[in-house]
Amino acid sequence: MTDGLSHLVLASASPRRLALLEQVGLRPDILIPTEIDETPNRRELPRNLAIRLANAKAQAALASPKLKQLEGSCYIVAADTVVAVGRRLVPKPEIAAEAAAGLQMLSGRSHRVYTALVVVAPNGKSKHRVVETRVRFKRLSRQDLESYLSTGEWRDKAGGYAIQGRAEAFVMNISGSYSNVVGLPLYDTVQLLLGLGYPVYFDWLNPA
Image 1 (tube, rainbow, N blue to C red):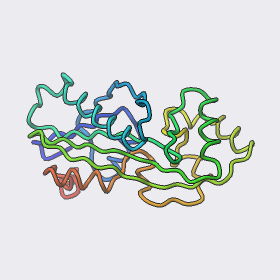
Image 2: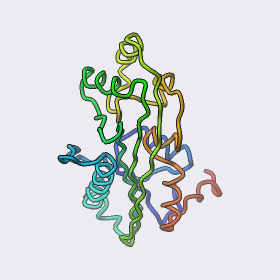
Image 3: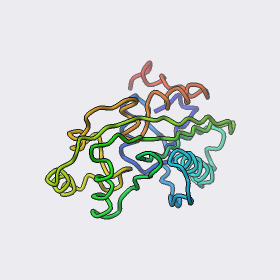
Image 4: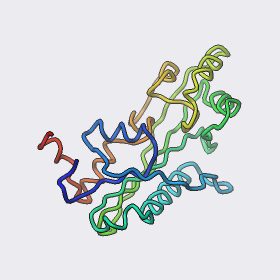
């Protein structure tokens, strides 16, 4: 629900990003899952990868037929999250063996979670931001690894874990935005939308 003039578009199929937006009273009018190639370029730094993919998602949403009839009234939010240890990317695993390798890389170390945000206004103007959070895991035992892999929580997760789930038991400390690690830094998302003129607080002031 918006002011009736503006439409909020989330360029993602992620239920986590949708839930985060709804947590702060932002209910997207349209969800546009974007199919893009997320393969890193050779020697591409994790931060740069997040930026490139977030931009690609925003462009894919802009080109969607769903938005043609609403042209001139849509605010698009696109984001991509990557996890890295130093310059080494911890990929989003497709199978348990990949998840295990990623978790072993994170074990007993600090890692960084980068989310690149792109918000596009109806007039075509856009704002960008990259948010970084540092997370430190405890040293994972074999039992930790095997038990976590058995939950299946690692599927479709950057870095192979969900901090909002059982993996929070592994987190010794966190520096920065918690919601960024879940998949969408809420403070920064709201600030970008406000800066482009989206009525963020409409539903707060006009509850259903």
